[in-house]
Length: 421
Image (tube, rainbow, N blue to C red; front, top):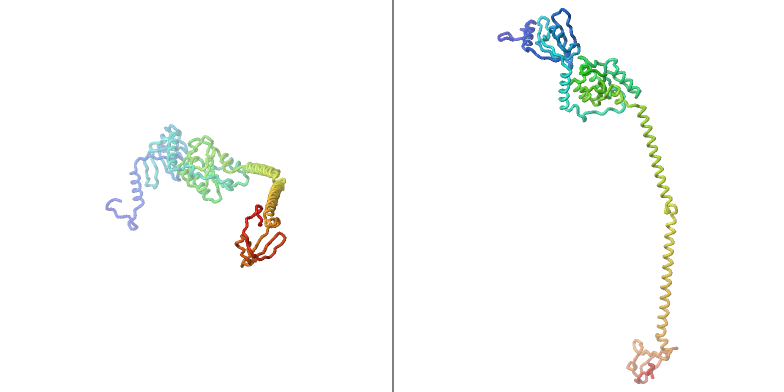
């Protein structure tokens, strides 16, 4: 809007020509720019002075009309065809008469294999730095998925291989197939759409992205940064089955599992039911064999224990101990009998000695025992001093006792035999 012009409003609207002129002026200020894209349409009729191209962004559903001198196409070192990656240099133009935008280019450079590989390496380094290739992000595949999502070309050999191999391995497996172009400018947007649909389906347990082998240019969509980030963000495990063994698009690094071929992907995702059944039968046989061996080993152990004397004749231990006890009892009885015999003999000797030394024997030899009985307590006397005249005494001899009264005392010297005179 120029200085002093009335402001744009509902009361003072711009005419269409004014808006077109302003847009053209702003776009022309952009100047010359370099733009990268993929050719999706080439229209260069013989005898015309202008070639019309369509340049498409491989990662988005956006395209731009391009015009150039047909000689630019003819002078290209590499033939330019639909699907070629190019870098163009030109000025954007806005045609006010039709209200359209186009890019008038003065230079077209095909992107060679070396440049493509260098760009892939830059993307690889960027995603690796962000951790999108980290093994800790990889999700495990389900053991026996009931529904498998498959993104592949329409009626392609890869689709037939995956479905045929998986069905042969497990006939009950089901597929949700999302058909999309697997090369060219429309491949990435179509694959992204199918990926979003399958990832949102709660019945899909794993997604396979498959296509056959091809050149580096053919496999470029599977190294596209937008597709790689979408695969990394999927909640469903993704298997990459792109090309053959030597082909290594970046999708192999981002996917949860990399399969060498579409056939290999089918084998990795769907187990062989026959092989699994055979493995289960083998394990059952091994378990049964191990169980039988264990039972046989335990039976041998039990038989060995039963064969031991302590278990074969449990009473033997009791008998042995009983014999020991009987022997101890006999030894004890002999010891007691011997002790009793010795003590009895000793008792007999002592009794004989006691009888010899006792008062009865003394009395039998003519001795007598004199007891004074007129005192308060009768007691034997051993001296004439204890027998005053008139004392009453009791005289005990061998065959009895007599009473007497002392009328006199006489002190006499004892005879050699110890009897009184």
